[in-house]
Length: 82
Image (tube, rainbow, N blue to C red; front, side):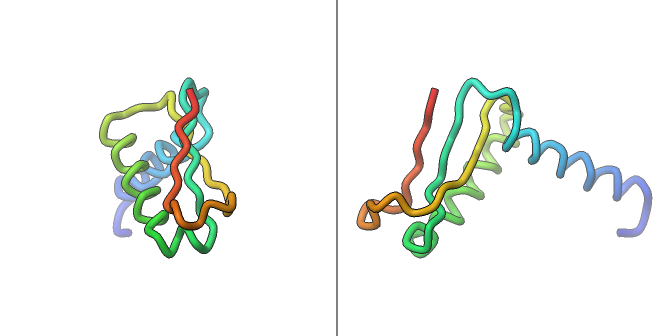
C-alpha cells in the first residue's frame, strides 16, 4: 500500500464483499464448507460465486457458509434459497 487512495480502494472493495455476505437479501446462497466440501472444491466454488456477484453488482444476495450436512459424496453443495 503506497497511498491513501489505494487504502480507500481496498476499503471499498472490502465493504462491497461484506455487503454480499450480510445484505438485505432476497436470495441467500449457502455453500457447504466442511472438510469434505473443501476437498471437493467448495473453496473455489465460494470464491467464484463471490466474484460473480461482485462483477454483476448484485447486492440483494447474501452468501453464507455451513459445515458438513452429511452428503459428502455430493460435494460441493450449494443451496440457493429464495
